[in-house]
Image (cartoon, one colour):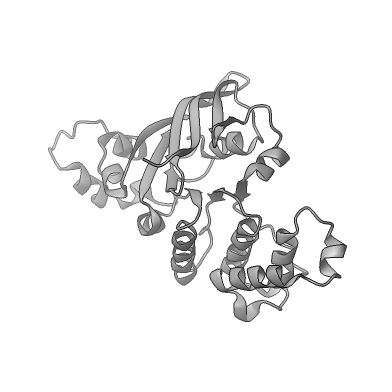
Length: 274
């Protein structure tokens, strides 16, 4: 059995009496790729916030590689090996992809010494490998502001990987992407999952089906259910959450058929990040 890289134990986060997370329990193995979905207000963003240290839990604990993160700052948690990619790409638009990755490899150094000093050969090989991995080797030396939205997403993912995190947190990586970019993003994440633990927050269910090995559904700050994408999509409780229907279908139509009939039940319009 794989060791647990992340354990969230009875976490509650309250804001002025409102429970963004409510006695939430979650764990994942090292080397696992997990997709988190849930309707508006489910607590998905707060879920990421308590892992990175941006938000401290009211109750409970978050264990990363066995260490309780409560007493650590965001910066310290990042140094421990947690990398987070936000919905909007955060790259240096006036620099090239190569320069962005070089900065990320030297994230403890200042910007100007990194840009205007000779890059060690080992680091150049690392950057070249990352450019190949994220599909930007042929655009390595153009300004990042000329990249497409999808290419900027891939660049930021590469910048995270350059910092050698053990756990990658990726928030809605395919929002606003073309179908081709979405497919390539899925291929990139599956490739990275061979050597990293990854949590993906996503609402595009076709994309979830492409990458998901295990899906966790959040609802009202707690875990509603977990399983494969097929198990989740056919779960009566999930259908009730998205469609507002009771658990027992009076017309005896199978749950999976109802979900297929109501394709909007798990669409981008209904599943949005908090």
